[in-house]
Length: 151
Image (cartoon, rainbow, N blue to C red; front, side, top):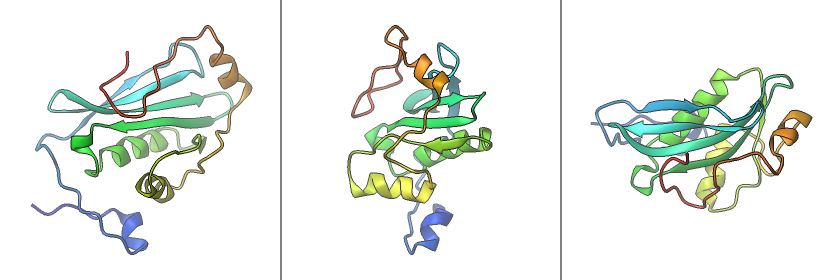
C-alpha cells in the first residue's frame, strides 16, 4: 500500500512516504488543562494503545496558543501521527496566534516545525497563561522522550 506525500514537503522538494502502522485510524483524545489557560494535551492512540501526545496551552480570552511538546513513540515516528495531532490542534483553534518554545534536537525536528509554519524559539504568552503556570499549579512532567501519556 502506498503512503501519501505531505503537501508542504512536496513543495519543498522532499517526499515523505507515510506508512500506516495500523489499519484502524488513530484516535485523538483531548485532556483538558487543570486550570483555565493551563497546559492540557491531545493524546494519540492506535488500536487502543497510547503512542504519543502533544502538550498544548491555550488562552481563549487572548487567543494565544503554545505547543510545548510533541512526543511520539519511536516505533511510530515518521508516520504522520505528530503532524495529524498538531494540525488538528491548529484547525480547532484557527483564530489563535501560535508559537513554541525553543526546539532542541535534530534537523529533522526543526524541519517538522518549518513545514508546520509555527514560529519556534520564543513562546508568545499572556497574563492568563503566566498565572496558570504558577508554582502551585500541577502540570504534566516534561520528558525528552515519550514514555506514554502523562496523567
